[in-house]
Image (cartoon, rainbow, N blue to C red; front, side, top):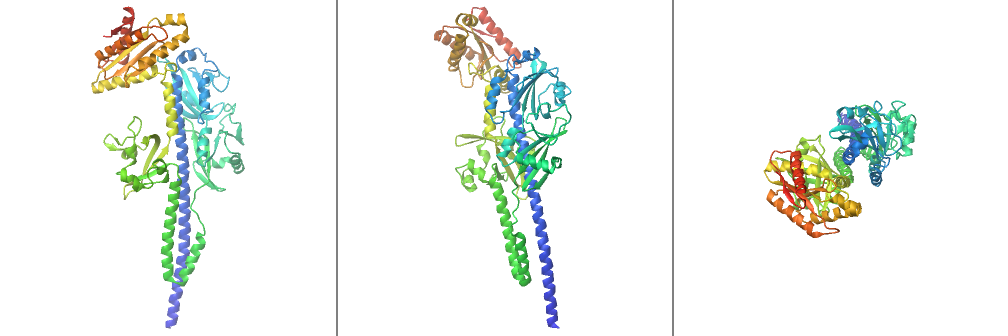
Amino acid sequence: MKAYKTFTVIVVIIFMLLMGGFATIRYIDLKKRNILNENYKLQSINLKGKLFNEISRKKESTTDIAIGLVSVPGLAQKVIDKDVPLDYYGKLIQKLKKSKAYKNAWIQIINKDGISIYRSWTAKRYDNLRGFRKDLDKIFKYKKSGFSISIGKFDLSFKTIMPIYKDKSFVGIVEIISHFNSIADNLKNSGINSVVVAIKQNERQLQYPFSKLSIGKYYVANINAPLKFRNYLKKNGVENYFNDSYKVENGYLIVSYPIKNINSKIIGYYIMFKKPSGIQNGNFDLFVFKLVSIILIIFLSLIVAGVILFLFILKRQKEHYRNIIDSSTNIMITNNMIKTTDANKAFFKVFSRYSTIDDFLAENECICDFFVEEDGYLQKKIGEITWLKYILENHDKEHKAKIHYFGRDYYFLIGASLIDDSTNEYCIVLTDITKQEVYKKELELLTITDPLTKIKNRRFYETTISKEMNRAKRHSVPLSVIMFDIDHFKNINDKYGHDVGDEILMSYCKLIALLIREEDQFCRVGGEEFIIVLPHLRLENAIKLAEKLRKTVEQSKEIIPITISFGVVQYIQGETKEQLYKRLDKALYMAKKEGRNRVVVGR
């Protein structure tokens, strides 16, 4: 009887262990599948985030270019006259072609009636785009700048639009048209292959397709779309990938991103292919089976082995996710609102003096210690709150940081999210945008620099005088302005030629630039007309400076002897920049009327 009971107990234990073993296998398999699916979901979100960031950078940089284009003198009148030469932006197009991001960029000018009067990529012009391009309807209605993705006669492309005004009257728009090729190239560097598919709405669209590629009846917008993946979509039915989701097929994570026009209507899909970094199976199932066999033999050994396996899996998962984080080209750090607590390998590629996070913390508290205080970038404290709290409270905005480390400037896009509520720990991701920011600043410099004299231009003056007047008003500090031009400059050009005139402008601008302060802003606002903005300088000192410049120029006699007439004013609290300019211009006029080669103070 005792033996029977013992046997029964053993059978029951074996049965329970067997059931427990099978239940454990099913649980582990289900858990594994959930982890894989979650992993793929996170990776698909990451791919969409990369694409979104690329589109955002495209929008920002093309907007800067468009601002520069509408600032070209005389453009508005050419638009009114419908007389824009075919090579009007020839030099700029050649410069853009040297940039990988804009070598295929197009420029189009459309007048207020919707007539295309200039296209940089074709001689075709004077066709009416109203009713054909729905995104233009809002621009013509509200006369404001805009950014959209739309299908035109030539391509599915990005359109950055900037209005053109003449004497405050709307006369037309300048449009920068850029393509998906540079975005696809950038994503390719991250192992992501791209196929951009447009949905053809009607026969009026895509009359002259740019890429000449298609998948069945669907147009392919990026000329660098790999043939392998185009054939795959054709074979499996490209319509099956028209969704806002992901698939795992043929060893690839396939993520679709809907492309919408200005009216939020889907006009295409950006389809991405990437080898997924999924959880590795190995001999997972075989290992579990052996583990269950051991349970059937020795219960205690099973428990010990189970604990060891559990710890092993946790360690492997932790190592695996750490490897994923360390393989990222983006800097990823953790912060507990007080200091940096951990960082991935990309962090130490920038902060190369340190090999571990402990080395870094021995000298610094936080990465924000390296933030450069500059307008438009994150500061260590914004008002009364820290930079991290500011990001979290303004998650819908784009945040940039400029970091100076060992004589070099870096620029990053920064995002943050909570990863552990119990420890109040946050993950911060820094995406390197140094190349884009440097290129952007170079373009900005071109748009505010006079090409002949290399000093600042009128556009820069208009921005600077507004800023300095606001500062003078806010802090009750003085602000003076000098306007001057070269006496009888037209006679010089007529007598010696424009080449000599240009040499005189360049030579005397260099001379005057050496005589003013570093913080003074020297601008060319007309042919031979110049303005110097003098922050924190009272009128009497501005008069002394003008006299010094007048005498130096008169005595210099470089190239040929010249004289200069000056008007000087000090900003009066409450006046507009137009009123200040009028006083300044009147003072210069009086200097010329009273005999030239003199300084007159405006009242």
